[in-house]
Image (cartoon, rainbow, N blue to C red; front, side):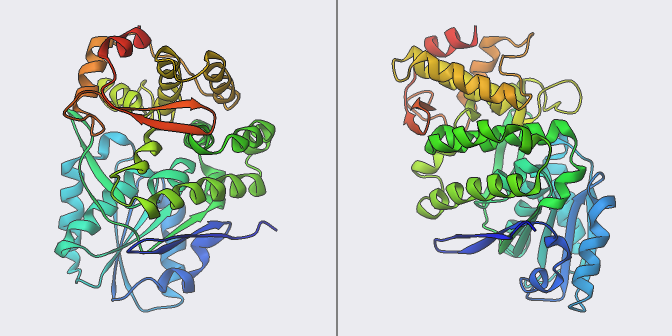
Amino acid sequence: MTPIHRIDVGGDMPYRIHVGPGLLDDGAALVAHVRGRHVLLASDGNVAPLYAARVIEALAAHSPVRVHTSNIAPGEASKTIDAFAALMHALADFGATRDACVFALGGGVVGDLAGFAAACWMRGIDCVQLPTTLLAMVDSSVGGKTAVDLPQGKNLVGAFHPPRAVFADTTTLRTLPDRELRAGMAEVVKYGAIMDAAFLDWLDANATALLERDDDALAAAIARSCAHKAAIVARDPREQGERALLNFGHTFAHAIEAEQGYAGGGGGLNHGEAVAVGMVLAARLSTALGLADAGHAMRLASLLQAFGLDTTLPSGLDPGALLARMRLDKKAAAGGLRFILWDGPGSARIVPEVPESAVLDVLQ
């Protein structure tokens, strides 16, 4: 039987991450984080039919709490000011009080939207993250970064709002489309790339088991990824320093996503796929700037390809347009473009004032 992994996130607002099978059915554990009588269960049109009733039944078995559901359309294109406003109206119509709790049941889009709604309703109420995608389990559900997108760029409007708890029920990955599972592996690989070279070796050895959704392998990979993120978040909760390392590949990725109009479900790359491309581009930029050996970038690309991920820039994207997107990225600074680059597997660094000419060379 797959064990339940528990990872504690420290800092001013500590909480626990639970990883393993059957967690959505543990009503006692879920309701322990509800202080009042109102729960807004935020989800999307794909996830809610599969798991919303399961969560509501688990809660009802242990508490008379009132649950109101609010679903958005699936996909990154729904992570908008309008969708955020709809959640605000849902909380208002529900009569949610200051001791209400928002449960975010879904992937990263739902988690970001629901977390931002919780951060803003009555200046902040509790949020419990129930991630159902691999990417959300290892990345967006942990750390308290919440946001919505604008046409000009990704995650430009948001707030830091740590959850009360995270429950990553690995049984939900059994219904995850293959494409989404592969996309989540990009963020898993990222942790090895920036801080744990031995993890890259483990991922290489266990790639088949992970893609075949072996419960033990998935739980181990998720727990190890969350432990790395938890350690960084505890030291740098508001991304003033080393937490920026978690954005390895993301400056390129966010530019690609924005330039494609966040069309991950309509012919463009989704977030994890864009991160896979972005990490390889960041590794190549590291080589161009004399920080890392070219062989390291090739090995990274090979591992990502083993998980079924493309590692080349999609055709039809204009390098100049991508560069313009990067200038608006949150990781840019007054002195110019700032990138997370690496010295090789397991070692990343923040590099300010990267010459735009070098970035264009890599994009071309």
